[in-house]
Image 1: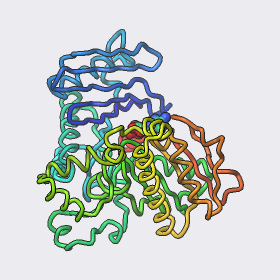
Image 2: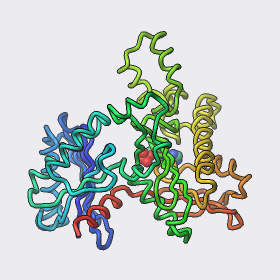
Image 3: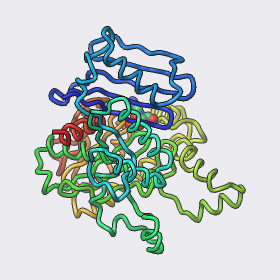
Length: 399
Ligand code: AMP
């Protein structure tokens, strides 16, 4: 069956058309700068990719219309009519406590996703726009919601409860939710498969290290802890996000600099992480390693801060699971950055796990075991594929 996967941001719409029987991508692309000058990219598998600059896209509706028109275009298209799209899978960032699984979207679901918007004000409203747009353009096609938070809904209360007055949980559902759930779920399942471990009895750790980064502890196939919290700001140091920080430090900076809460949140989300530590050199790890090699101490410090905290989370999750059977690295940094992986694995030598230096040279798209055969447990690079995971979930629900 063909599933159209839609991932709507505030001014963008990413799409992939996937045949879930063969798991082949038929076409993919992105509409960017919606509401501005419109930038449309289309890559059909086996066909001729193209980009249209200054394409008419005042809203997501026109953007989605361009996607559908192009997919069904007699020359550039990969299907002959909309009837060939069996379902649409939407990535939804925050499902709160309401959504522990993917759902078929109806008006009731949209209302509940709207209610979760306060928890993800930048993302959920854009996701809803994408859903409404597709419902309008394809009224007879089932629309499925796949939530970033859903996989982590199995966390026990002592892992998701913040040690603050309980009334804030009762009144506003302030608690830890976790994100990148589709990726943690996909990669943990695949990790168990490639290691030939029974998922239902396993203890796995997944390090999803991209522009946003999070680690999860997956015990018997279920997420029992993850490093992000109520929002994606908690946990690891990231490209531009601070991750864990003493709120007292935030209060102190706000007072010293006379910053509003909005300015503080902007600083912690967009100007911190490795970008902030490196004095705005870059949030891209390639730039940081290069600068470090040229003697830039702050680039080196930014990498040290990132790796050190990552090691701490991995160590913590080994402790909470009372052991570990396998570890996976995934996403942009996890799949490509041998330096980060090397540092983490070296810190696990005491557990009897050792790096295979040659295998660790892996790059994008390659599944590879990076620990030596005599290691006590394996460490793998497993490329994530959130779109495929969404397409699988969608197909399963529609069937
Ligand atoms: P993602 O959000 O998963 O697309 O990851 C994007 C990030 O991956 C970039 O900001 C880089 O920091 C990192 N990245 C991508 N390619 C490489 C590479 N070859 N080496 C190191 N880091 C990389």
